[in-house]
Image (cartoon, rainbow, N blue to C red; front, side, top):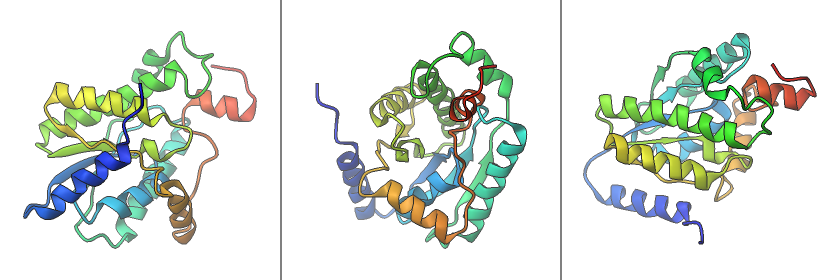
Length: 210
């Protein structure tokens, strides 16, 4: 079965929003400032955005703190059409390790990563429902290493469960990833060399698992 064209779905949704007289609210789960850069540039003409930084997978704590600061700094500096707000989720690393138990040896992009996507998207969906947001989505699909099909499948299911529209997308399309690297250079951002968790750190640096 062919995968849906998520970029076309997004463009159709944005076209409908542009024809309306309301600025909808969007809860945007962000994995890091560089990945959020193009997404915010792209979507901030259509939505009132709250960036939700929920990433309990990130290791170590110092790395997490650096990425939070980078995200806040970019939001503060970025000249958006509508104000962008920021919410930091709980840095509950033990929740991530409980989820990953038994899958420590999985390669990046495997089953452990899919559960990590679900963990973060579920938290975003729950907050979107509590906050009465019109939509929620994630920046994760901008990465060439992330499976946009599975991300959208997970997000869509969670959206149905919580009764909040999930904004289907594949932000790497239309040179989105390339644009994010350009914006990262323009804003002098710190760009990490591993996804974020201890397992991706160890895989990147050839170390043994926890």
